[in-house]
Length: 88
Image (cartoon, rainbow, N blue to C red):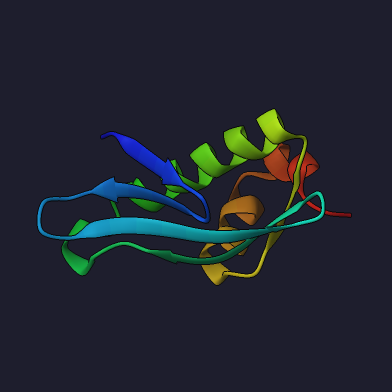
């Protein structure tokens, strides 16, 4: 699966639909507002791939992440070793 990035969005094309992660950058913080995966593609780790790509991007840019989306909050609860990228 190829992850595409444009300002404010990471996405994966899934044919007629796409999975997305939407964010804003404020100062040195990446605020992740929303993740969406079409119903028929849920449970396959697609949203996790988008979060992981956003983590990689944040590290490259020297940003901290502030989850404002329940999926992203849950992702970090399930992956505590990655919490060092979160805003204090």
